[in-house]
Image 1 (cartoon, rainbow, N blue to C red):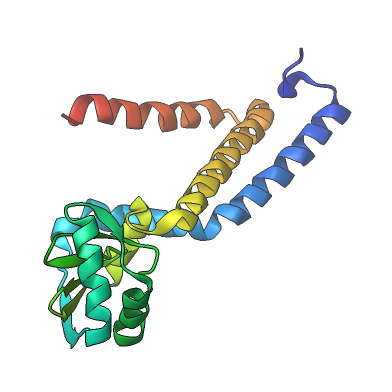
Image 2 (image 1 turned 180 degrees about the horizontal axis):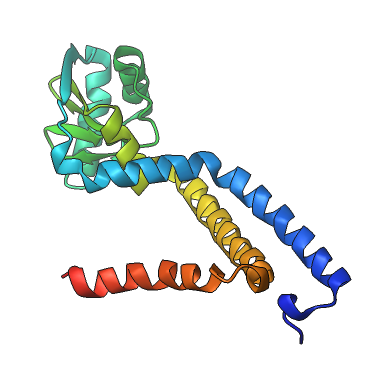
Length: 212
């Protein structure tokens, strides 16, 4: 089968048209993601040099007496296991702290329930004791930390994970169509193959020689 570079002019033009179409579509889909992942690649590479000042906020409350029985029974059933908070207790936490914890599994002991609430750019947790004492703590590490965590997909949820997969696929299409377009123009551009070769070999040599 003939390669795109050796096809007759009409077929070659059709190939080039389709490649350009897929190249610009994939580049449009990649645009914001590419900027985000490129910028955060720099911030992650210099994470130790970028000072972060975590902001910690704490709140306390008391679980109403009618709900303590629900919590106590759940603590007896789920001690040393993981299970969601009782529905009425979860609804109270939503009203009191603005937390949607109904579907999140808590870590139970006979004395309390602990709900870990990690998120991009910070952390949070909720603890409710069987005596009714409730504590909520939230840590915010700033915008750079938030962007870095999005780069890594850390605690960002399944939808963001799907976005990363789709973005990665679009980048593959963008790269391959760019390569094929350069191949079609290589005959008139003598520097094409040396530049492509440098783009392939340079990262490989750097990884082999300077990483350990």
